[in-house]
Length: 189
Image (cartoon, rainbow, N blue to C red; front, side, top):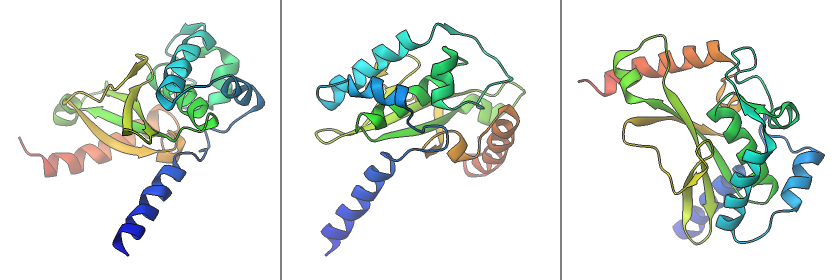
């Protein structure tokens, strides 16, 4: 009975990450991209990473749109503001291709210990491969099997940034500060 229950929990988690969040809805343009991708899970992932870099023309940080766009808006605008946008495009195309993909928000341990105005973090993804389980992907750096370094702490996993309640720079700062207070209590120097 326990094995069946455990299997159901695992299947529910995998199924959750085939779902689309508020920022990762599939549009006809994204479906077209996904329909042209074939191969094993890891081959598809590499193709999505390669295609992603050709879909955007530039990278420029813009606080006005930071965390405020959907994957389809990023695709339409043809530029990314950093790792969040790269991850949103990657995750949406992965899910549209039938690959479960998590959005994983991390925070630099140095910022957690010392604080400051410049919040340090990075977005990763984990994709599910039946042969290997959950595999780390760094969409910004276009690397597979690239777990966060030891100096990064996982803040939260979800469907996308909005699913985590982060919708702009101010909400990111607020949520990170709340997390930081609790983290410092649990991780004294």
